[in-house]
Image (tube, rainbow, N blue to C red; front, side, top):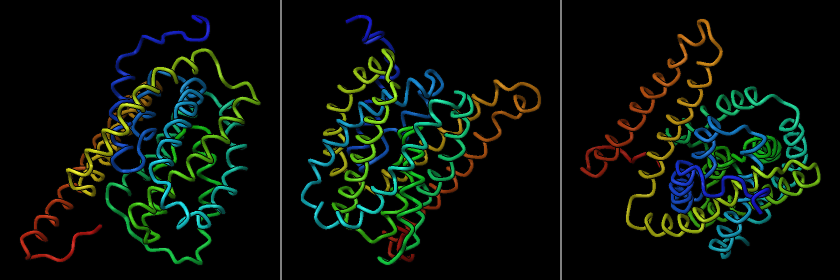
Amino acid sequence: MQTWLPGIHGDPSLIVLALAAAMVNGAIGYGFSTLVVPVALLAYPSSTLTPGLVLAEIVLNLLALLVNRRAIPAVFWRVVPMMLASLPGIALGVTLLKTASPNTLRFATYLVLLPLVLLQAAGLRRPLSKSSRAELPVGFGIGILYSCTTISGPPLGLLFNNQGLAQDEFRAAISLFRITESIATGIAFSLLSVYTPASVGLALQILPCILIGLPIGRLAVSMIDPESFRRICMAADAWLISFGLSRLLTTYGGITARLAYAPMLVVLLLDGFILSRFFLRRRAERAGVGGPVEP
């Protein structure tokens, strides 16, 4: 047992982080990996972190799908093309995970995530018609991203937020896509012998956090403004990603190391601008002197 469960009682910081991320996921429908990965990558290589998170997220996504099951018929056929398009992307992503260097994967993860999360924090809305074919390339790209990092919430959030879905349909669409990608990725990892004792041990540390945090987040969101909470979470996540990127840049030496914390400073300023703009508009709307707040 000790061979396959190393460090099962270790890393309190990972447990606290996973619990907070599970609460966020329960509240807004996504965000678990988006919050965990940028920080955990500083301590774990992608080859250990990603397989461990995939195992844990199969349980997370099954629970989310069960909770949102009533809205599945309304979104099922809309999500199917994306699910199918993600499968070749997953195959490519698993190959990259096995062959790319850890620092290359870390750097690519931060660079891809940062603009996506900032767009979520800014509340980007560009409505898509039902005849749009954006789902196919987006599904393929998300398949690559998820199988390398376990992250898919920000691009899924951007896509489904722009399709005019009701809140329960939004949650169901994300849950349906994510259970497909997590199971497909988990099977691919098993076939290619990607799992290690360390990744299995990491998954077993995270699972209790998911079981506890998910229902707490679901309950808490009924007592707060969901959109304000989502904006704050995405802004905080952008800061975490920029922090991870800056810490990674310090390892390269030279001028790169001296300017390493510039990305974090820029993101902090952008976060401050985005949040202050949102809350000023929200206050103006409540006072009855401004236009509608961006959703």
